[in-house]
Image (cartoon, rainbow, N blue to C red; front, side, top):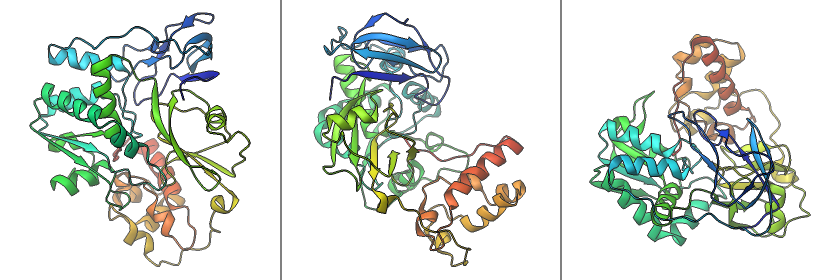
Length: 382
């Protein structure tokens, strides 16, 4: 899917400072042209994903009306003769973590260099149900993946690289769990994989980097899985950044679909959407459309203290106690029970026979704790 009628490019598609538009309404732009940027260290530029005319540009988003031509800027492979050139090229590409984290890639690579990383771990463990975008990326673009790994290892002087694939066990795609599974290194609470010498990057991020270093075309599209019980023909497609779900589904031949629930991302960690006017950003790897039966929540009843949530928790936490601490507003208990060690995988809520909304209350508990103490200890996705 290359051409579309319009795209909405949010100014915040990454962790860090949002971008500011550098184009004006009425200006014609080409696919790949820079439309927003920031001077902040942790930020990533935004590029037009189609050719057309800028309809609006403000602090929230740049809206481009497509002209149906999909004309692209003239590009060439970036000239990289030093580490500084490499980091600058990665920043210019607009790359962020395509596994969902959205951390600017150039900032991550710079941090890995100063931390003395000795292992590159490519995260291809796409373990959430339905989602196969990374699988297709690895299958269809293996040469790009290899080139990306070579560039990273060369410029960061990393001697060992590992690719971690699917093992059928959710949530082993979480980077801290993958690090332990493949390197036996333990990432302490409040730390990142680079603190134990491991740089974790998503497989789609690395494959894109390989393409960019060869072509110079910045990040303007990504692979997206479309699936769910309301989808008559599941598929993966290459979608322009900023396309609406409505237009993307029409392209897929699903223009008359009326799902009971819309999720961007996987069913365990994705975010529910109010309607099909939501847009695809750099961080979005899937659109799931559920029918009424699939979207029906479990009726919530009293906790029976069966311990299922404790046994299911990959971080060995006690979700039932965390829920109770949140409900009574006990921030001290939330901290003592290590609430910020929770990676919000949703396993506890999924297995709970009482239908308790455990992961949602843990998320709210984290926010309560941050407001009270200013703490922020989390896991992450690459």
